[in-house]
Amino acid sequence: MSSLSSRLPAPSLALFCKVVDNYGDIGICWRLARQLWHEHGVRVTLWVDDLASFRRICPEVDPQAALQQVQGVRVRHWTGQEGAYGPDEVADIVIEFFAVDPPPGYVAAMAGRMPRPVWFNLEGLSAEEWVEGCHRLPSMHPRLKLTKHFFFPGFTAKTGGLLHEAGLDAARAAFQAERAAMAAFLGRFGVTAAEMEALKVSLFCYPHAPVAELLHAWEHGREPVLCLVPEGVAAAAVEAFLGAPGCAGAHATRGALTLRVLPFVPQPDYDRLLWACDLNVVRGEDSFVRAQWADRPFVWHIYPQDENLHHKKLRAFLGRYAGGLDALADFSLGWNGATAIDSWPAAWDALRPTLPRIVARAAAWREEVLAHGDLATQLLDFARALETGAENPV
Image (cartoon, rainbow, N blue to C red; front, side, top):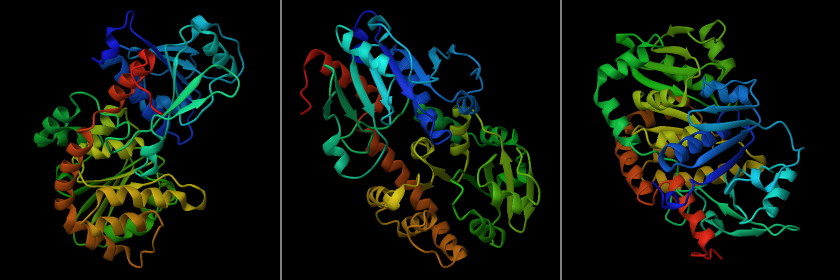
């Protein structure tokens, strides 16, 4: 329990989320909301504009409900910027995820509330050095007596850490220690005993990834590969391989490659999928962070930005993570279009033998990052410091 738990009654928190990257934005906010409630007793209201996407990763969500309670979290459908609010409707802590603007009426009510709420802009994850200098910086509202603070997740002691629930590592280790448990889990998706012996890869990427080239390399390779793809991901390449629509449950084997299309699953099952595979290709931020806790090699497909700014972010992460793992760095850069890959079979043949070394790096990396603390706890501790005046972040 965070030190904020000493406050009576339990603190309230409003988390504003707009779904831009289909599942990444709501994925991060939903994990944070659950952890804040389950581990810290924070009364969370999650404002979200796209309940249909939310439901795909949390089947309990009713996409028609204006207000509902899901796993202890109050979920409010955010339908627009209109509306008036009273100071009594404002939470103790207000978080806007990735610089979304709360309704102007809500912000006005924040200014009228006494004491005024702690206000955070929870930023996107980056390994770039400049993040350390911006973490916890204040920003004064141009008209109202309100101060917002930037809170950056990150990998170092000078950032806000990553989302990581208590007991996560123990649950992962127990699952991975029981091959029968992994087989039973994957068996729910049709994976056979023979396919369990193949190299198992989960594939979650953006549409522009060179998936067709990688599938071709696996199909004509020497080693059996089982590729597990969520429905709708890399649709063109998947349907071309299947020769049929890529609906959940569809599968085909060609050469050394078997491809199976999976339904979208709740977040705990997605974690188990990452734990059960030998290599995970992930995208955006949410699955990228979860892959780091899986104790498995992963390749990151970063969210594309104008002027290829995402390539700089990718190189910053690889600089921290992939030292001495040249094949992983080369493959990752090529996968993201930052460098040219002349031969995907050659790139895969270079990466494949290094997977055991990457496993060792994954374990060491996990310990390094977690030594700085998890994001939810750091965020609440900073909120308390701001409330009491115990910390001046400037």
